[in-house]
Image (cartoon, rainbow, N blue to C red; front, side, top):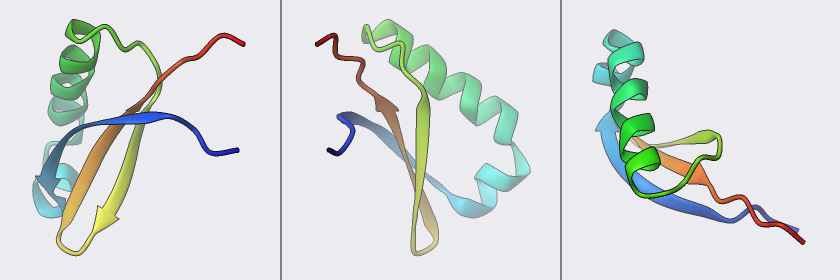
Length: 59
């Protein structure tokens, strides 16, 4: 079964490589403020990288 994720935003791949730590911290803060405390996931699409946060579900 697939994981549940929520899209947080997109960044240019060049910027992500150059300032990875700053960008990860930025999206970690966005996820925490939104109430999501899961792992960050990255998906490359063309020249951009889409950042998602995994949604934790208790079953």
